[in-house]
Image (tube, rainbow, N blue to C red):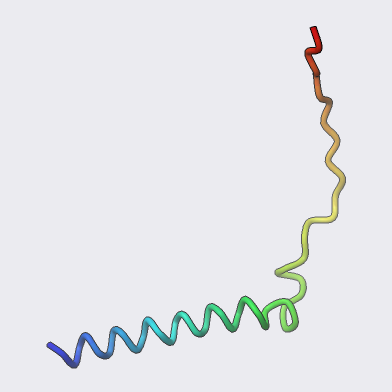
Length: 50
């Protein structure tokens, strides 16, 4: 049972390291995935100043 817990713990740590690496290296390796949408949004705003 202890061996299963250790394996799961190692997998969780590896997944966390992979997520952090993707967050830091992702914009360098996959710039299109991290680019913001390039469109202008125009919406009218009604201000009730009464």
